[in-house]
Image (tube, rainbow, N blue to C red):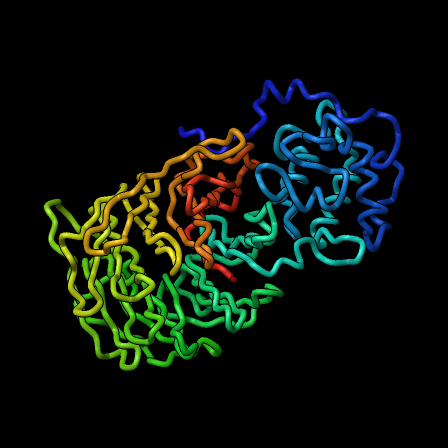
Length: 492
């Protein structure tokens, strides 16, 4: 089994840590009626317990607190540890701070001391369940405005990450949204809406959330098993592909009203002989929509102004056996080229959009089972980054000459701070809008990797998001997210 994201504190090192504080009575001891405390005021009720039991030199205080976690202030809790967030508002069961003090994961904290009284542990649980609020009643991370949203299908959650460039710790999980089977996410910044496709044939398999309040504002249906989504430049159409991996789908591409989620084209559009439409790219100019069809080895090209005016373009032939399975497609910023991943042949194909023909000489071999891919924005070094699902790597392709692309690097680095591999079954990948960072969503769907501690009994091994510096290609941070992280979208 692969080692995965392991703790920066090996077991032997943990044994050498000095005990936190002393065992004398004080905040956190028995005798306090914690149930009667309402509202919870952090500096009056939470911080004194931390000061007495955790925030001492040699533990979680001082110049070099253990695992980078400083528990001497609210700011320290907000910053978290080397591994990212330790408190996730409303989710104590996902908050490492609570999991350690409750003993649900080892080592139990305070380290080498008697456990905190169960009433104290329950008090911490309630504080987090109520939003981990500070003295002013504001929920932790409430002020974050720039965010990354990650669909984590294996755990029925959408993770929200802090991507504020002013924060040295950006990449922390700041919120979790409970969504059954989230397959992909799409942020429409102009309307401050988050669209989530649910991999289910249900009456509400499209959810829409407010990106600020996280409130569910609309639900609708987009055929069977909706896959990827995007909104046309004028904001009038939401396009959705229908992945049909279970045999009862309709192989349709749906067009919905982004506000009402009503079908603009009732029943969708089903191109002839097309199977399993999945990948989706919409031209910002308003010209075409491209859809990669997995089981028919082709790409559908739709006119945005007249969706029934379309053509289907076959992938080039290859020397192997079986299907090539095109998964995803993206446009270059100038819209002159379309890049398509082929999971079955481990290739990236390049199409000219001027005549919708593939440039066969531009084909690039990448890692095993390429899935999603991302193109650098205007002004950045011209590159396409490809997440290789089975290859557990990221391929960087130099596309300065799109008709003669070359592999510039294959990335399979270790994480920082003594962590294990930074790449664990990667699927989702995206450049930040400014082009300075690349986020890679690691599914860990085979659970072959592990988090920095064993998960609670009966739960899945986590996925992760690796954040790369786009220029140096170095890993800046690996943050733990729920299982089967598979798609990323940004609120700039």
